[in-house]
Every structure is written in structure tokens, then in C-alpha cells.
Length: 444
Image 1 (tube, helix red, strand yellow):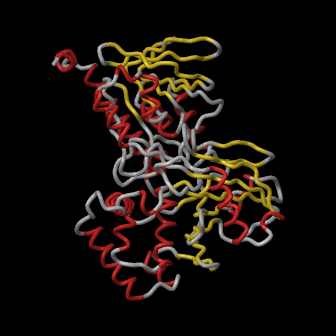
Image 2 (image 1 turned 90 degrees about the vertical axis):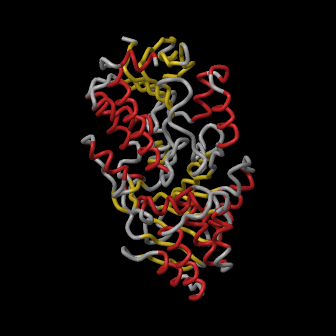
Image 3 (image 1 turned 180 degrees about the horizontal axis):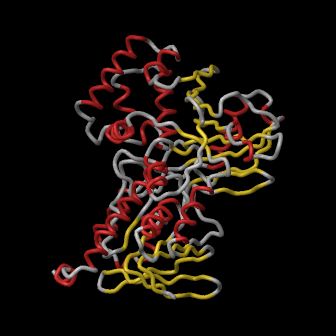
């Protein structure tokens, strides 16, 4: 059968959450994925006995992701990573639960008068008036402090939460994120690997009559009179015409354009995509350890050349590595989001950081995978504050994922939130189509 209510292109978490929500609501859903596995950047690669991430490191807890899973009756098996730990000037600083930014700045030895000035400015930004959009967070911060320790700490916070540097995000976007999340939420690790999350979503889709095809590549989105009709899907050696009432693209707004054809989309939409979107880039080194390099599950690194976070998920989830071994995941946000990284130089800077942080590093480790998130697979399809609408100019053709983030969201929570919006919009419109008012509405 090649007729579905909803066709979802791409089985990343945005696509899978949208499909799961709609399947639970009674829609006949098909998800197609070109890769042999589902999950996108929230999946798992088995390599030499290790379960390696395809992108997502820590999974936010006590927030929108967990709420979504509970809302559709899906298990959310995440083990807490514990209190936040920072590595600053060779010192590990633990930020106990209930403590916040002031505690961290004081523990790092920042000047008390600058802390007072900065905390007052932050309070005004959050509780009175958010800074105007053109001002970068780096420009905003420099008004209140030139202390390199403080700037390094904020660089780490921005890099690990928003995947950009201080100059790569507006002050407005930063404070909307902090306000929306009421700070920075705790996170944890999936004991069976990140793929456990999309697998649970796949299970709920299948149980509700939907289908998920892997190794199924979308060739072209089909439309008529500026309204989507389905897509051509290359699956099992043949090209099938899949018809659907709505199509959801989870492959990024620019890739959606390629499938739909630029000639079929309005000029204003194309111009917006061409000028607004700036993909975020990152490097992720996944490293085998003979023994743990530090006691906590993670360290957020301040003041390095490139490395901004170090995760030892095996501290909480030993099954992610062979028995008696550990896994280290080191991440780095590259120098610029608007220019393609010099890969060799960026990796060299990462390795310099690791060798300085851990003397003898090369003698007790093995690089398993060097993950490069750019081009077709960036860490984000666009940096926060430069997102586009979930709706495209083609009626009933949607984008979902981290290219259509709502202000105040980023990463996996942003992807899930976008899925909620897309599913709700489709549900509202398809309910309308099924009503007696549908004809009058659509011909208006």
C-alpha cells in the first residue's frame, strides 16, 4: 500500500517524534530513512565493542524530551550524569545541585566586584529587558567584564549548550535560552546507547499501524498547485510513488529545497534560507580508555584551545564499552560557524588540548572515531536565532528539527519541541480537512 496520511522523510529525532505523536493520534504514518539505522544524530554505532554516539552526548532530563516520551507512553531510560563539573586552570570545580553561576565564578577566582556587576546585568536581561538582537553575546559580556576567567567560563557554557562561540550568537538568543530553561537543566546518558530512544519511538509507531523504512532514499517531493502530494522513494531497488496528505522533512531546510526543487518554491523563502541559515560545526573525538582519566562522568572545559567538554559515559553506563574498558568523548566547537573549518588544523588543536590536560594521553588511549559534524551533517542545521518556519511555501510540506528551532531552545530539546509544533499543526489541519468546512476553507 503506497497511500499514507503522513510521510516523514528522515528518521532523526525530529522525524521520529513527529511520526510517533501522529501515530498515537491515529494517523497512518510512514517514515523513510536513507541510512541503515534510525536516530540521525541521536543514534549508536557499534565499533570494536564500544557503543559510540552519532552526535548527541548528554540527554536533557526533567525537560521537554522526558515529558514528550512520558506523554506518549514511551520509556525514558536515562541515567543522571550527576552534578556539573568544570575544569578550569587544571582544577576540577563541582557545582552542587542548587548552586549556580555565582558559585562557579567565585570558585574560579573571578574578581568579586566584576561578579557583582555581571550578575546585576544578567538579572536585568532576564527579568526586565532582553538585549537587542544585533548585539552578540560576546559584545554584551565585554561591557561588564574583561576577566579572561569569566569569559572562558561563558565560552564553555555557550559552546556546550548552544554549539557556537561567544561571537556566534546574539545576546538576545542566549538570554531567551536561559530564561526558557530556567538555567541549565541536568542531563544523563542512555545505558544502551542513544539509539534506544528512537527505537522506542519506532516501536510505538509500528504498534499504531505505521511503518519505518531504512535504506529508503527520497528522490523527489511531489506537488501539484503548490500543495504537496507525496514523494518518490527509492527502496529495495525500486522507486515507489508514496502519496500522503502531509509530508514532513527532517533532513534540514536546505535539503528540503533540493527535494522539492528551487523552481517550485517562492523567492522570499529561498532568499531567507540563503541569507539566514548558518550551520553549526563541531568535532567529536571518541576515544577508548584503559582506565578513567578523571572521577566525574564529565568535565566542561574552560580556557582550552578547542575542547569544551569531556564525557566518560561509561562512568554511569559501563555497557557502552567492553568489560574493563572506558569511553571518552571529547567535543570541540570550531572557530567559526560561518566558514568551513580547516579540518586538519582543528583536529590538531583538539589533540594539543588533550595532551596538555592529560600528560601521557597518547600512551593510554586509542582514537576510535573522529566525528566531523559539518556539510550535510552539521551539529545544527543553523545556529540559534537564525531559524525558519516549520511551514514551507508548499501547502502541507513541513520542516522539522534543529533548523526550525523556537526561540529559547537548542539541541535535542529544540528538535522535540519542533516535532510537537509540527504534529499539532498537522492534527489541526487534517481535522479541518475531515470536517464539513474543509471545502470552503481550502477554496478561500
